Image 1 (tube, one colour):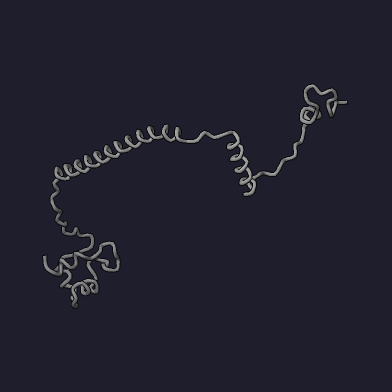
Image 2 (cartoon, rainbow, N blue to C red):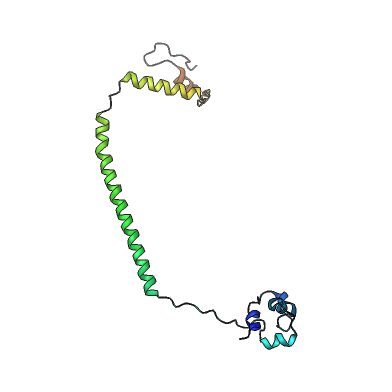
Length: 164
């Protein structure tokens, strides 16, 4: 293969601007690649036409057995890493399980008054933040609903809101 043929092998078959209607490289494209002015005969002697199969690139031989062995080794290393992580996780869970009862034993038992104070403090903070819904007026569907909701309580001599 001549030097010009090697240069023309670099032309892109998909680029229409580089080719003539006959499928030969344009003189301007060939001259630009060669770095000198070429004639049509020079280009034809190189033998490059559009759609012509390019010289196949030589591929290095692949040792698939070696690649497979390397992949198996990498997989085995990752499996060993995961097993070590699982052992550490199991040990951490055991330690947590053993420490929680100790933590609970060392906590001071809370009194009812402490619980009420904490509840009132959280409720006040909640209201101060504006997280309280506005009260909704109750609308009763019937007189009986009204009587049951607002009427006398059990054992009352005169229930309020009696029906007619």
